[in-house]
Image (cartoon, rainbow, N blue to C red; front, top):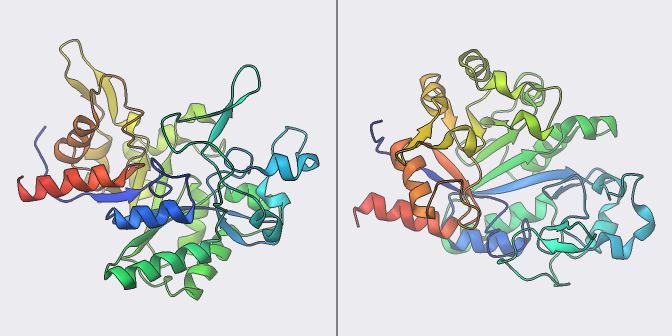
Length: 327
């Protein structure tokens, strides 16, 4: 495969989440300082319809909600952001992402990252995060992009909220709704992207996120079909690009140690679609990849993707800058 000479965007996945708890303002400020081109905002709604920056519709994986509101879990044992007012969410402290082991103990998903503890970091609103990034752009003389994901639009619709319209309203209030060079909107739900384009007349570039069908991300979406030539042609009718899982592109290595690659990037580029795969982590490398630079070289230099979502924006920035200068 020929090498495609261009510059890929560094997209800070949940901020500089390899170093600080994800989606905190501290993680976003660090990502800004590390030179990320875009900084990601996953958005869910509070009970009173305020967009907050949180990866999950649940609060329990990254906050101390169970300690403050032990009686507020649903029958499945989870604490849903939509069940809490903004004032209640503001009372919570954010920590590193955790999961329960077989004995029910809460352990860090990435043990080598920021230590677990109470801390003083909270859940920001979307407006607060935009204000932070805009302020840093001014003080540091930069122009950093927003990369906003609408989380679970169908779930929010069932709760009586139009998350797409609400997020667009916040972007308009902050002066970003007509900055197509500075904002991407992404979603796993193709119908929500069509709604943004057709009904809400959104002028911002849209990105179709592509999950693995086994994850159960959205049972109404056929992600296998979206990766097909016909699916990609359909995506091109309403979106500017795709955000695939990196393992839908890199399939492992053959017996000779050579990477096995799908043709997803090539087919997407043939439809004039941008390709922004996720997630590049130096502490969670795909099978057969020896180090982070090997992973970056494969996707940026060999495959020529247009941007990467990474927990470590400093390492990606350093690699891309070195390649561009020939250092």
